[in-house]
Image 1 (cartoon, rainbow, N blue to C red):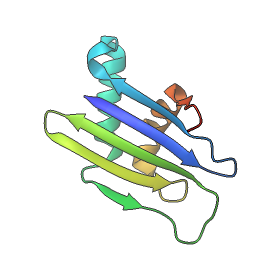
Image 2 (image 1 turned 120 degrees about the horizontal axis):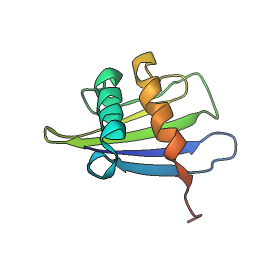
Image 3 (image 1 turned 180 degrees about the vertical axis):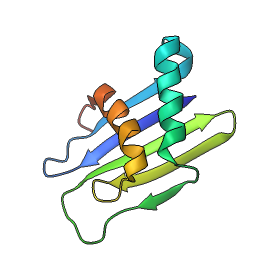
Image 4 (image 1 turned 60 degrees about the vertical axis):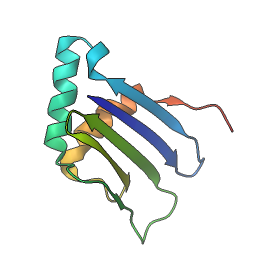
Length: 100
């Protein structure tokens, strides 16, 4: 399983990202990642952004496993409660991207 996060937006507009591949993690970390992805409830691609808030962080999450690939986009106001633990796991690993 591979999970990629691209975090952007917010007041400063800094872009951070990470890609986590369960095949190169320790067995415990790989189990944590797979458990968090399953518990997130994310099962289909889509974009879910708040229409009422501004300057929110935006999170593009792509999940690839043996069943296929899906990609979702949330912002701080629209992240499902069930996905917050997975998002936290990914944000801990995200690093700033160089300016384009």
